[in-house]
Length: 394
Image (cartoon, rainbow, N blue to C red; front, side, top):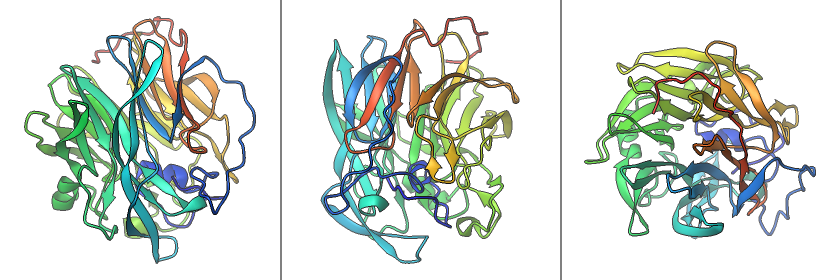
């Protein structure tokens, strides 16, 4: 992930690039040295997984096991990528360094490795690897990597795709970059970063593509990908956005999602620079693709899930100030319609995702940015007391 003092003048459209463009060191190299240690802070709950590189999702299986996926650290294959800030290019690498991890009976095990792309070096590095996990009919699915037309290499296998775990190995299910290259639903640069992933009540997989700025639907039986909705830019940019034909707007950047029983999809949007407090939101997408606001006044929302109490819970990654994201400003938010959402747990260091067991205990990935191996998943007992009003969701 790329981390610098503050955001450059150009806006990147994928979630990972948005988060890392103005943050402290994430992936230090031998030449740049180790990153400064974050402030000491005692964490709530208990640690259930450690040693992760930019963890992006946690999933609680019916058997009680915990699945976690991270971004990885690129690899040995080299190529170049466009640098919108300088107008030049940056070195990039690709490799199978992202991890899909399972924790069962207190034992943490790497189930398989996944594609990871790293763009830039040292304090300018940004990575995208494993995204989100979904389980349907006993099959484990994961969104993987990103790809864009500014990359100089031929696209590696499985980058910008949805994969399924088959005999312990990732196997292609759907190619989201192929849809982006042929249809370009967002209408701007060719860029697919399949990120948010859930199974719907109709047997389909739903994807928040943070690069294409679109909600996609995948038939896991045949891999056919279709666009449900493309999200409009978010007003508020203090200068023209070259990536959006000079419009004074940020990329919407969809991240997390929940699909209701009636087919309505709720999607978190994480607009880019200047990461204004309250500029993030949850939109609802009707089955016919109509998009409308559901919950507003939120900040840097990276995930959305339904708790066993029936309420929806979102993840606030951080609050941004003049020096970038503030350590320990991440939070879990109970989502309410309109402007009524409320923080139920604060003080978290760069959380990215949340899931629940049926007892209302929450599992949260933290340190989505940080030194290599600093990522963790933690358990918070009884985050929901089962008192919420049920919603008709999966």
